Image (cartoon, rainbow, N blue to C red; front, side, top):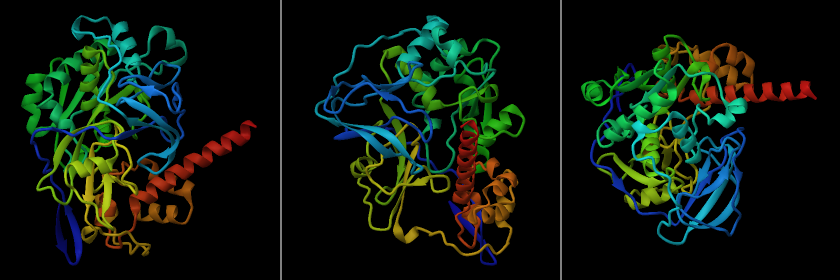
Length: 433
């Protein structure tokens, strides 16, 4: 990232500088910790007990719709209990202490995806633990959501220096192309499939992918932001598409799609994640392959990245990432990047008052009056904050980046939205009683 200064204020000039070197596979960790829930969502029900030995790929927790969580290493279930997600919310987790190399459960491969039937693809995906808006026939009555008419595949990375999703147009291009054929079969011939790609990779993507719309995307955070990309595809302002099938649109990362196809062909559940790491000791960002649930401390140690007192370890990039207080925090499917900021480069937030310079409003890509909304959230007027636009925040981080008072503006937005939702749920529960 580069800053230019005008009259003492910084103007953001952000460009992508992701490193396109090869992907390194890191050694297996001694233990993994796997999330069994996300925030207030229903947790997966554990189907194993503490002290039980599990094999790689074995179901360890499940939901009624047959999707679930699989062991990513072979070893002993060490604990089942509370943990934290990247946002700091308490969730249910399961830890496995690895005691040997991989011992895999029996597989059920589909060697030729193009010849597999729609119901077979949907059923095997569910058994392999992939969340999907398409459900097996026997579950449609209770869990099938709205019909899907648009599938968005994101082969772009939201912020520098992360270089994960674009790799599925290069090193793993065949996996992505093959998997999209399976998506076409499940979504139906009439469904619209849009693949967002870096504009410099447009020609490569069009040659690689058949029967899809290729959407070239610039490298600025306002262009690569997930919510704004979805808005661009559907042609209207929408918020984050979190639940599969919301508004008839479902969003996947290129990595999730490519891994799904590979897992279908191998008949084995997903155990790996690609992560871009950047920090002291690395001359350039490095993308590595790790087991899901690996402690971030293990990843950094393998790459020789030292974390000193006051350094910030961030899941994601410097604009949109989440600081982690614990080096045991696990790598999950949402962890595309790990960024370590040395203590001498950390710009701390402050509780200084807003000076009404307007820079946050100027850079906001969805035109929120950030200066006002931040103050409403700061002083507990959550309903007013939401009515003024906090719910439309796409968490790009540009407002906090340019704020000369160093106010935690993105955190204020998140705080207002979560408090508002929680109070709405509590009010509805009280009315129901």
